Image (cartoon, rainbow, N blue to C red; front, top):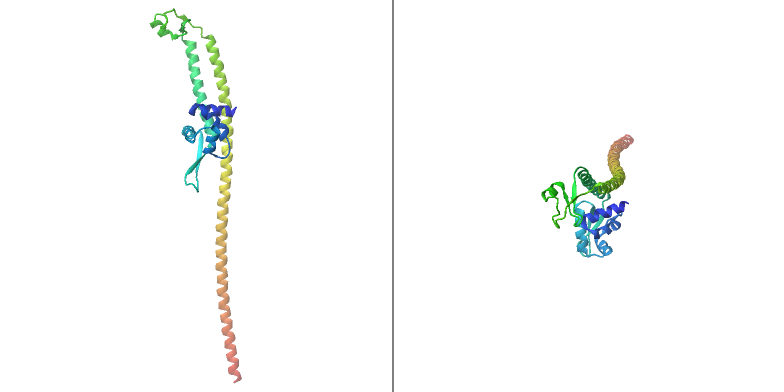
Length: 242
């Protein structure tokens, strides 16, 4: 069901050839544009034109990578599910609004039709043409809108169901987006905590190094004093013996 709507969205923007993009781009990874062209049996320029059109609406995203050997850039593409669903939802709302307007019009206004040419005129235009067909001159007859109104109402109900499904999918996709954001935030938090811990360890190392230096200096001073005292005692004993 979801893919059906995504296909419709792609076709609405870039025509029938764009429908097959859904199966190719509905992945977690970005797909090489040359692979897309090959799968669609199109030239790379035709493929890019389709992708750029859809990209203008935000329904697909791309990243580019430089070929180290050849030196040129290659684009990799992926479908944006949430943006696509929002586009479909917006389109369904427009269709519903248009149908509701037509239903109101059919329920409140009168229309006249030529049985031969099947040309329809509203009451104002029919009156202006003396209720005669502009093509064949036949007398126009009042149209019974009941069947058409019922058909429009059935279509409206179908659109409402489709919109409900799309809104559910949007809610699911928003949850997925929030989960991804939460995971990324946790990762970032861990990285920040890791950096802070490393900085703390560095400070502790410096403190330890400073303490070790101070201990060494104190030891040196103590040994100097001990050595001086020992030397003085030795000299004193030598003098005493003499």
